[in-house]
Length: 369
Image 1: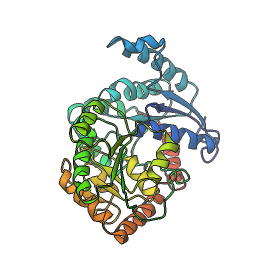
Image 2: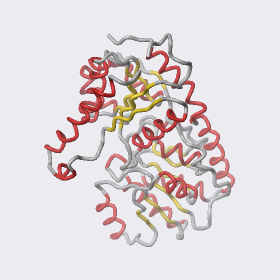
Image 3: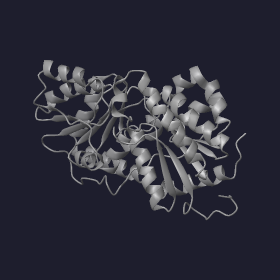
Image 4: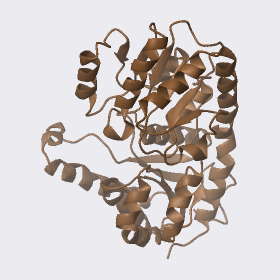
């Protein structure tokens, strides 16, 4: 579409949205799915090029190393076709091999076919990745129209490497995640909604919960997620005789996740590295106070003592003390819940939509180098 003749707003815009989709329901996959739905509702013609499409044939997924080729070759073909039928590429990008295998090819193929690209970078470990690979990333970014990130934290990470980024925040659905509207229960429920991976340090949450139990023996901890550490975490729960108080809920879909927030009294984010965790936005929207580590982009998102309790990473005592303080003081709990809910309103589609359109509009008028 010629920029001079396109309609104002998203109506009629052909967008190729490149990123993962659930399952699994991780943060980037959920944001990709949600953005696709919102753009479609706004009148755009959205074509999703899925980076984690099911293996075809299915048995290829059981072949180490070779399975990458079974996924990559069809992915490249879909990119090529989408680039010839779209006005704009919106690429959800992450660190490491995800960048090299999925984001970079999308940028280059779109560039070869003359389609402007918005790179939406979301990796919480961007600092380490750019220390190793900034030159390679810059080579691809010179072919993109714009780089956008969800937080000031990531913008500051990219700047020393000669890459300017604009901020387009993550979006939370206030129609789905609604406030519970009461105080903490007599048998408080603590929720962790992160993948069961070392990066998210669920073990610290479990150890903090052990301390909380001394003050609130009827408390329960729900861990909503799956991942490679599940067996290890379950073994810890069994060894510490916590089985009656800890529930592994597995990976929950959107509506089930919203219901779980609604049934929870505190949300814990024990991550060792982070950018702009959707779990914090969803807890805020649900009227659930948050206790989170103060890593990466979290201090850019949450204000300690106002919208969340920020604690050092890998410190179960500090996390437990923050939880106990909130559960022991109903007025503090309610004030924190209200402040979080107010903050969540900054991340609705109605707030983010004009920012995103401004990015698309500028991208459509630029010709990559």
